[in-house]
Image 1: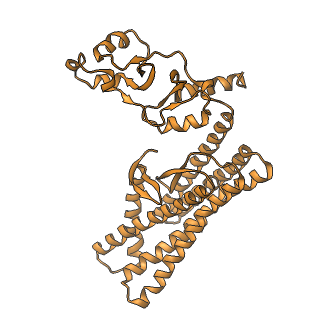
Image 2 (image 1 turned 180 degrees about the vertical axis):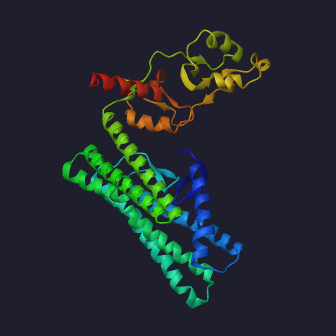
Image 3 (image 1 turned 120 degrees about the vertical axis):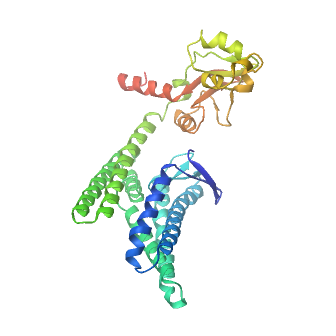
Length: 375
């Protein structure tokens, strides 16, 4: 998982994508300069800033709870979740496996809107009770607006456009009816694109009617939904095409390894100018030990090359950095995406037999498309 780690909750690792910082700033500005001064006029700037900051934090906490509800239901169905990453709009739960039954996807997708409705009810209760217990108008206003936002979040997510929760519910229903996940994803993705263009159209109308900020947000959300719908369908097509493909089908077997006890000077003389790769698997007594790249060597002062070894400089193998030839390529692809090295070493009976990278997968897909089959 990428992004900045901010901690653990319910046993799930929570991260924020760097794009989230942009959206946090935009929401904070919208709350502080637009929403709360309109809803509660007459307060000072410091109060509006405090309302905006607390409202923004609580809103993103609500989004996080929405995603956590998905994750907890997924784990109850036997689908492991490594963690959650918050990004520009909402978040994503990183699951190790895909849904195997449409009923599982239906329940997991439904959990998010249910959580948002519950959160909206809680904030609504707080806004109702605020004046009766003497709470400040600023506190009551923040609670009331968060109740509204969570209600909108729940209803919006139930719209039948993939990859929104409603689109996933729609996909699960089509999947159940047809038994074809790829077909169901295609239909649900079309719904997502239709919804996206409708949102962008409404945003333009809102701008022409004088609602500049609301219109821009609507267009931004529509653009995001359209891109997400298209990429989600392409991912499903890729998963479908890789369903029966193993690492052995894709990996590069013509590999050149580097002994771990070699000095960097020996490595440069033997590999940099005579070799044809920019990174090399490192072996220690024929067992995979890590990966060494030219960039790592370049970062070491040349006067140290004669006494510093490959083992001292290489990137050691990560826990998931080794796979077997029989590993399903779809599982290996997920490991490659989460790997710092961007590649996996392939080991069989203690020996390094190949290496697999995103480039290997891209070449395999391109050739499969040209040939129309795996043969």
